[in-house]
Amino acid sequence: MTLHSQPEIELHPAFAWDCEECGKEVFCRALVDDELTKAVNGVMGMAETLALEEEPTGGIALKVPTRVECPFCGSWFPCFPQEG
Ligand SMILES: [Zn+2]
Image 1: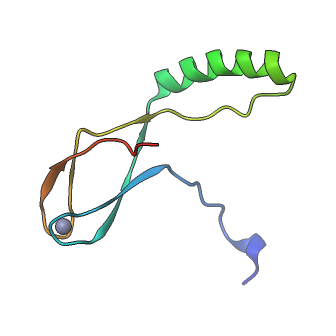
Image 2: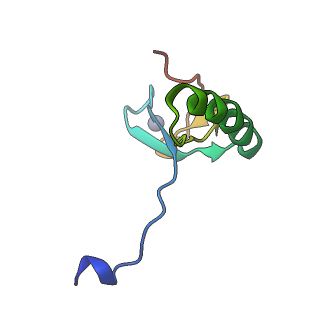
């Protein structure tokens, strides 16, 4: 099977975290904040265009959950975005 016959896959942003209870690495799909994405791209796009005189590449803003559930052991944890 060639690469061209395969359907193109859309990549979704996701958060990854390590369960403190069972030690498994968990991936959960992140929700895109459409309103914030538009607002951020509007502001940053203008700033980038002025500074670099290039087309801004833009980005996406994600809704960060306040807690996560491990699908392996069912434990709940409060969470925060990665620092640094
Ligand atoms: Zn777990």
